[in-house]
Length: 477
Ligand code: GDG
Image 1 (cartoon, rainbow, N blue to C red):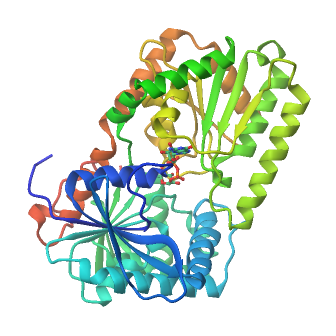
Image 2: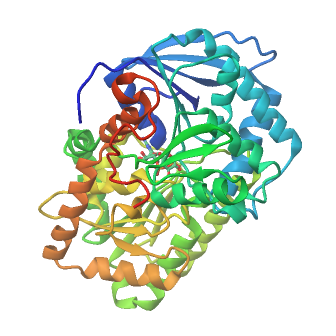
């Protein structure tokens, strides 16, 4: 890819969590990106204020400048807990049974986005490129355009885009989708999500999309790209060989007394397929009694979005399920599921991944899923484990050398666990090498540079449509 001077980057996302701690996939990726290119990361502080003032707190965290603003309680309830996490998140993960459609949520979402636009406006300089992240901030671009921002602006969606008939259940869906035409570039992880978007704008809105990925609606043109996010693969592989990872590896292996570890690491979220995973594992315990005492499932699931009822429900349901399975199968010296509701440091996680013979990554629907890539990056090349991956994770499009499963089928999960446990070293190595190469080549910096290439436009100038060679040859291939 051609090198040129990059503009400053203004990243805008709901939460700003540069630095250490239990970061989500988005946070991990963006910290790496901003460290590399400089700029500002703007968003909600996560804190509440009695009256919104637009006061910005600046901080420098691990080489990244952050600018955050507090929100009022009503904004948090209607925008964040409401429209973002009770309306869009379930809908975009195909769970219209859980989606809640309330006008007050939609109003709060719009209000919060106007507030974000108003607040970030003075931070944007002429040559900056603005990059808005994820479903919390879909209308932000249009709000900025209405405030005379002429800069190049891009939007990246980290979660799936739903099929058009599901999206049509959202009141005023079209009004929301229209706002995306304010951006110069709109990115998705996979061709599948991009195609669903194209279906909606063409069939429901009468937009047209050219083979080069430029979409036109009422004279506005935006470039659509499929650009799968990666991890910092090299750093993660190094972390898996660190002292902390090594001592974690030793501790975990010792506790297994010769058994094989199956590991799952997920935010506690209904999209991650945890109940179905436990049921698939239970099926394996029933179907293969001779093998069942040879394995342990360690599920790490730090709680998230506890203010939302569907998250409270999934938490208690999982506790019940783990208790039932352990109660039915455990013996004096063996418990089939170690279920842990706590977050661990990343180097500890890396050691756990490396100690696991199987990485069980079985979301019912996932924009990408970075855990699948981390598991691969953490393996020992001489004795790699096996990745079992849901065909409904965005990552499946790139990771066809994993054992791909249907996470809704307990039998499929059970068969895959058995196949992974019995897989000869040679096959494990062959599959892992192919996966590891993909994870290394399409890492987080590849994602960043590729998206930026689109965002900057040719030599940083004017229109992008048709002018930059698509680094994913023909987006709609
Ligand atoms: C969204 C999309 C997309 C988990 N437990 C701990 C911990 N984690 C880290 C993992 C991984 C990250 O959280 C989870 O990333 P995912 O990609 O799996 O999922 P989401 O958080 O739902 O992210 C997703 C992503 O955005 C990026 O575009 O891939 O599809 O839903 O990095 O390691 N980290 C630490 N302790 C834990 O206990 N430190």
